[in-house]
Length: 291
Image (tube, rainbow, N blue to C red; front, side):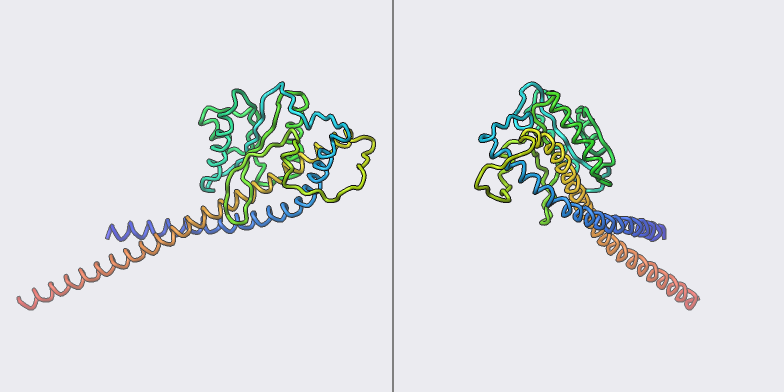
């Protein structure tokens, strides 16, 4: 009897867990769809910015563009921005990003680390790597204001020559379900970083920038960095929720399998108890008949 009671308690606990994993799956699905909408809203604007920047960089040699954002200062260290989530239950999502960041840091004698997400910060600290800057609650509700604050920090470190290059490590959202961390350069803006962008138009003559190309570029870069960071936040949020969806779906499937197995064991245990009771009654009846 005690074995049957234990099986029932375990079955009840698993059913409760399944309700939680099922609810988290639906919640992650909703959040991922919302993040995808924001990605689509921002992608056209970001593409236009990147095309304009590529246009300026490509014609720079004809216009004598000498700008701090297109040259590696050579006076500081490299900055790495690592974007993880603030919560777990998303498989190896956070661990993969931290591992990719550590792989990049192995090539650096000195560096500045900016960690976005409490999960990543805790993992870095467990490896005795202490971030120089930390932000939390970014992916839960990404905003342009947050992207602007963080990009402003990056631009200030670059313009003050504290860093030579800035890189960002995050997980690009892939509709095929492949979540692989990548490392992208943020600053400086080099021509090879824009090879995937086609220019919107071709000019018969060189364009004229007012008041000057350098001044236009100076105003354009901070807006670009903010837009790029916001796009990265959206992709990271979509990737995080996609990873959590997979993890919760897997947990729900495992719970269903365990519920099926436990239900079969409980039924077998009940049948065994009924059979034993029938045998006891039959044995008692035979004894009385013999007497």
